[in-house]
Length: 266
Image (tube, rainbow, N blue to C red; front, side, top):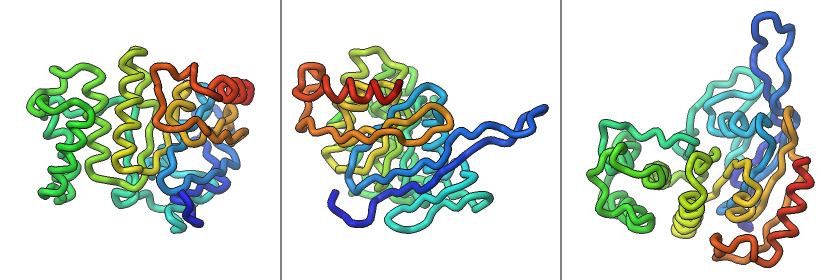
């Protein structure tokens, strides 16, 4: 994480949606929002409900545009305000894991996982080996021919994660991917994610409303204000890795960081 040029840089981002019927002007969702992410950094972001966290990731992923501001990927401008052409995923440089697993119900788990690679014409022997390694790391080996309805919620989440990691994007955006599962499954998925991250050390931007999750996973935690969102605090997480997520609250320094982030959210 020592590169002088950030892997991702957001400068002065602002967003509001077109006014609805009867509205003279819609409110701003994001306002003057700026931050950067270093190569291989695991950045987590927390903010109140409705703060625009998903909107921010949609703009970075080129699913939606901004009204103001710029986004740079490895120093290259990829987003310009007002009307620039959108390129979802920015030529496969951005992976995006959403709250839903979005697995196709008529495809087996392995067919879901390998679909992006096949669409890109990249499903060669090296890609197959990488998929096998990811399946093994998440204990999904043996379930390749199962359909989504035959898998547990946690297994579907793992498959969704592997599908994104398999085509090897430099940056992975994650929008509260574990919010819909129970606490025990959530802890296991967090451990799986960290294990997968250690395999390839991708740059990750992970959005959550859970302070403990943000601290458990991140190298840094950015705190967003309520809408219109901007960065109000930046906390470096010095808790050493690997982290025992089952005993997170007992880790040295966790309580102090948790209280600092909680105060910033109020």
